[in-house]
Length: 256
Length: 256
Image (cartoon, rainbow over all chains, first blue to last red; front, side, top):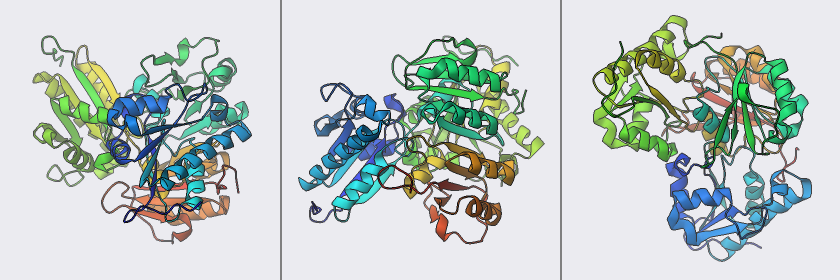
């Protein structure tokens, strides 16, 4: 399928980061991109396309005028967890939806993603797939605030100061990868570790007895929870939790 | 000095991330915070307080109504590079300016910073200092898009996919720290390495002959330059450059 661009326009696919959940944490550039898109693709929830997913919630709250141009793409929790073929299936469904939109004459298609399209998103696969199918396609990326940044802001624990090193690691890469990060970085942010929280905390407290930190659950949503590292118990939390582990610092820019 | 809050209000100090330079990469929340602040502190340039610094440029472009409430705080390039006492002097000047504003009766003081207040900013020192001086102070942080994210968006090289690990390292921490990051992470972003670019490139090409990447200079500004890793020569670039080194990936989510 080679969908020609409408006369005089360049078909444009925009990956739009909508931030962690709080509609106010969207950028002006993202609002502009959503506002001028002919179609706004959003991931549907794991229970099908009848429910409003998180990216769609942010789009609707931040940019209500877009409602009539939203199209839900199947994107189950299993797929979001990167389970091989289902993950593949997910971005391929998005690519098909984008290609169909261009074939119907859309000039600009936006793909809204929670956080930032450059951080653990499938937008790049989607874009490569659509580029191969739509002649002259232009691809743009609009960055968004990540859960890591929203947690640092909410907990008021800086990610990095002065000459510190920051590592972002998905716990799905294995606890030994988290351990290596703790050994080689001042600050470590671990994504997707909620279900393994007891083991993760053992690791953190062993490697960094003096660290400060916080766990963020549903960051940017109305039910947001920020729990100090010292107050965390041995209870698992939801999969999409964010753990921030930072060095204890003095109040004047040095280390305690 | 213990400045009482104006009757009925809680004195509030807000660290506001204004993004990397493009006024459209500011969040709605940052615009709101700047709009309701009684005083907006911005770092002045190294040549004194007669010149408009980058944070001020973004504030003026994104939020022109704020112009009359902006106050410039001395913040030289030497200070930004973290040269001991001068760095200290810099955030102390900001703290004094904030305390003076609260003493004059300001309810809300914003401190505008390029990027994100949680990423290599002195806002936390400033906040701790002001908290000690102003009774009942509330501190808030509004995250902002970082140069790292803006470079990933502009170069369309994702920072991390699937189970990859990302490390952010300031080259001021030493080349051996960059080397350790290259050994333990899939993607490395090196800040402030422009002047050491030839040595940095030697390191990167030795450790990662197959990497893709880009150097960003003045990201988000009208003169923005994005140079592919493969096209980088042996010429130093400005201090505030951002180097992104990522794994070569397939177009369907795996590694090449």
